[in-house]
Image (cartoon, rainbow, N blue to C red; front, side, top):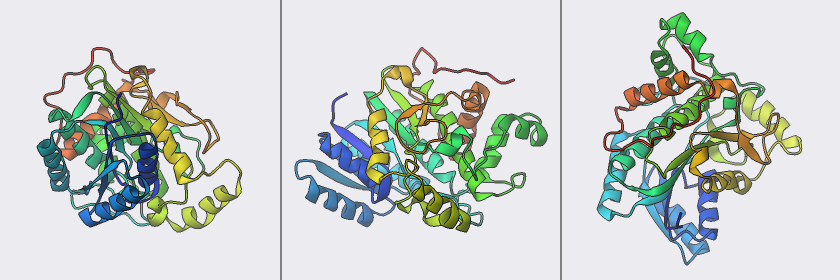
Length: 331
C-alpha cells in the first residue's frame, strides 16, 4: 500500500493527533485531519503542518453525531476524487455519569460507531477507498472481558430474556440504551466497544478483496481528552491506580502507534480485534480469541442493528469471496 492519503477522525487532540504525527513521520503525502468544527480541524492541521512541512494536512469538518455532517464530508471527498488509502476511525467517547442520548436517539458512547459506519459505508459506496485500503477502528480492552469495573452484556442471554431471542433487536437496544437496558456507564462503554469488534468482523466479510479492516485497542492512555466525560470512580479511583502500576499506562504516541502497526497487517487478519495480552493494558497487541468475540450470530446482529440505527447500508460494494474467521456460531 502506497503512503498517499490517510483520513483520521478525532484528530484535533489526543490519540488522533498523535496518529496524524506518526503518519507524517512515515511519509504519508496527505493526511485529512477531522474535527467537529472546521475551525478546530484547521487549527490542528496548521499546527501539524508547522511540524511537518513536507506533508499536506487537509482540515475537514466531521461531526459523527450528525448524519448531515458525514454526508457533507463525503461529498467534499467526491469533489476531490482522491481515494483514501488508510481510514483511521479513532474518535470515541467514555460515557457520562448520567445517561446522555444524541439527537438521533443513540447513547453517547455508542454514537461514534454509528457515525463511523455512516462514513465508512458512504466512502465505500462512492468508491472513495483505494483497492488495497486499510480501515482501523478504535476498540478498547473491556471488550475482551476481565477488566476491573467493566462488564459487557451477555447478548444471547439478554436477547432471550427481553427480545424472544432476536439478537439484532437486543443490539439495537444496547445502542439506544432503551427501556430494557439499565444504564451503567462503564458497562455501556464495554458494550459499545464489543459491538465495535463485532461490527469489524461483519464488515470484513463484506469488503472487496484486497481491502481489510481491524479493530484495535490503543490500550491504557489516560493522558487524553477521552476521559473528560468519565464518572467520578473511573477518574479518581481506577485511572490513578492504573497510573501508579508499571506497564498499565502509556503515552498517546505509544498508544496511537498500535493503529499504525495494524495499518500494515495483511488481509488474512481482516476482521480481527487486537488488544493487549491478558491482564495487560500496554505492550504488544495480539489477536483476541475469546469465544464471545467470534460468535458470528452476534457479529451479524451487530451489523444489522447498526445498519438499522444509522439508516445506511452497503449498496455497490462486492464482498470478498472468503469470509472472515468465525470460531463459534450461535443459534
